[in-house]
Length: 622
View 1 (tube, rainbow, N blue to C red):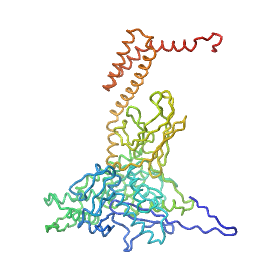
View 2 (view 1 turned 60 degrees about the horizontal axis):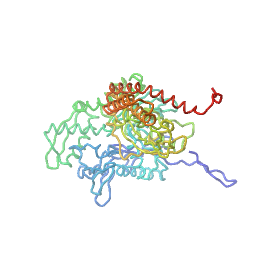
View 3 (view 1 turned 180 degrees about the vertical axis):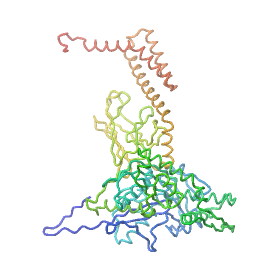
View 4 (view 1 turned 120 degrees about the horizontal axis):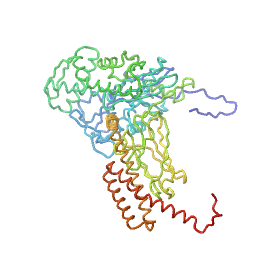
């Protein structure tokens, strides 16, 4: 956005001043902040020269908190008040959280987003994330000596409406103006694209601490277009740690652990995993809080065997994204690795085998997302010349639709649509004299609203009473560049309007998203049959309403026998509609149409006679 400067006559305009905007990678395991200086994006270190900030917050009884490295060191000593991997909880309700032996945190069930019980009181994932973001904001302002005008914050491509909104809320709590939420794979592609000037189809394989994203992008001059995405918001390096921990416990015959020992062993297991990226074997040597010594040798091959199922899950999602893009692995020019977990040799070998080429690894996988976000932030802050501009085109992971009569879903914005986007569609009323309309916004790929995710409901009131089908209600869906949705409904004749910005309190996990997509494929035939049945039921209801209205108005046109025949056919159709069986319903529909055919003709004749009553033949113009 250009800023106009008003000067007194004879005064020269002030020289352009750079506006400080940063890119922030809010990660599951680590977070960091980057900025563009002298045209080059760079990650900002803390006072001790460390770029990565552990995404860990410890709450203390006096209201103070420890954030980052200090909190991470205390995690094993105070596991119930030290929150790690909070990104996995963003936008989630209590029912979305699976509690296991290896989750020392205590959760509080609420109607909205899950709360975490701490010694300093309940904390939401938004609050915890805000503490991390505020630390990064302070680091940037201290390093650069001025306040931020805003930040581009990255999120997994598969984050849904609730998770994206929760991220924006956390930034607001941290005092950060969000210039844009940017998908992590897109940010990585931006960093690689700027460095190499490459064009064509590229895959971004992003395996972080808690999430996995796979994006297929078409890179052309100045345009970064996401053509397909896949991923799992509950799959990352943490899961590799958990599997290795379970393996260690099984090897040692340990069934249960104290919460302190869980955190202690998890930290040592993580260190062993990282070491196995550099050496063939490592010794796990730790003493539990009860004095029990643990010594175990772990090898890289052993680790690869243990985690093979997790690696294959990422490859399965990778192949799915390639199919969605209509590409084969051979058509991909390069594969960029993002996230610290991609340092694992088992992952790199698998990616190379899948695509038939060594992956790109020219940028630190821990920093690449933040560096790309910093470039986008610099552009949005107005620090780049127009010839340096580029266009980022992300896509929706799931379709957005509206519930129709009979519980059917009409998809208004299909999945993989490029965002930002606005789509509109016209609907009408179902009953005579209808003055209100309920709008149910859903997300998913299934044919029935009950099988999709409910996002929001609102009502349009004040529609002028008209015959069924006469009203014209235009429903508009708008998805902004951050993937956030607003919906409006407007009756075109009267101008009455209602709208809603979709801000759900918590949302889907990526595992649920993937399951929804899988369900839609497996049950496509069943869904189509159900849709056909619902359409028949709607047709039946319309015919029943019309027939009963006609009987009430013109029963005198029928003999007693004819009326009895029609009433029996009405009863049969109503029963068939309730039984919800396609063949009997179709037969009952056909039968009622047949027995009312003569009745309909008589009503038409009656209407014509009434229209012509008292008029001369010469008055009628043909």
